Image: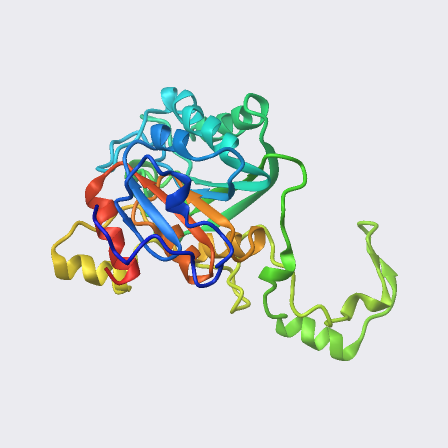
Length: 324
């Protein structure tokens, strides 16, 4: 076993909860920490070893159905829905009744023409209509690090604009998953603070919405974020790229001569949903862990975690996120 820290011990944040490695006693972790365990292998098989209704949040970003092949592997658009449903059936099984499944998935262009594929919409419909998930809410991640591709349509012929938004679908096992938006409030904008100071009069907007005299109250502690993900520490939209070149993970990879995972998402993504949808001691699962950003965020915020990854090189390097 490739150990990172002395296991298995309950997390210091959640002493009353079982260490995740004890949920899968027949499988040896690739490494583990006080709060989590990482496993190497096909997550379709590894998921079968996780007890039903034991996971509070599944947060993941699987390989997208791009029309060109990536080093980390990706499935063609025509096969993608059937391929992903083999994972999603197990995800549905391991979720608690009040648990959530958050899926970050990017769109794709059709080969040979400047039109967009519908594969990710077909997947979302299949998750709901075939597997019984509920679509709690559609969210979006603005990623300015995306390249202006396909170059033929964006930079050569100039007939399309750069695609910089990815879908983040919040799905659930029942219509009422555990969630609390008070945990992800962001600071009030300067406009809201000025409005609170000046006060408002009761009115009815042309849209029919009632604006009451209490509209300017700011006692709730912050502004409710929108489904275009926002940084809780700023008033601007979260401009979160996946091309960081100087964080601890990438620096350690460079120092060690290890390949950096090419499709990382920013820590702000799992952090937002982890705060919104879980409590300390809850269990977070990423079945396409890659560099294990979700596990590192879970560890930092006192959640337990399980990471599943098929490629050993990526999982080995993910230990750098934990000081390994």
